[in-house]
Image (cartoon, rainbow, N blue to C red):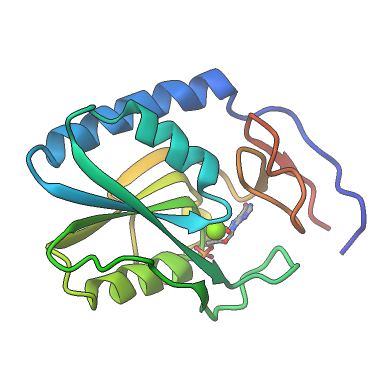
Length: 179
Ligand code: IMP
Ligand code: MG
């Protein structure tokens, strides 16, 4: 793995992402009207997307938030296929409608694992919302319920997503060259 990564051009601007968040937040607000919702963000990649969505939800939607942290990649750009929980939920989701919020759906290993895990905590329902979907990377048969943008088989950084912990701060989506 090189020390330096070559940043490519902008793929989705901050404005495009904000517009998408408004669209998806409106859908979620409609779908979950009158229900107790817990949005569970997956640290660290989902932080920007999660906050963008939260701000745009209907103001009288009954929503609380929680976070989980998982590791599957280490410092590499390919999944290890193993998911480890580094930080669990702070609060019970018993009887609540859970929306799992992820940065990107790639192999599907993480999402499948987390949806099953949350499903075992006696919630009223579990759905998932991802900023990005990379269908070409799929190794397990799983789809997200709400998808921001579909991307090609490239390594994405920015807007919360990293390569070796870099570039999470970029306000837009871009990519880096890998090997
Ligand atoms: P999956 O388990 O292979 O679906 O991978 C999900 C996790 O891998 C995401 O939550 C990201 O943290 C990471 N990931 C997958 N693809 C990318 C990418 O293109 N850029 C940055 N992180 C990625
Ligand atoms: Mg992640």
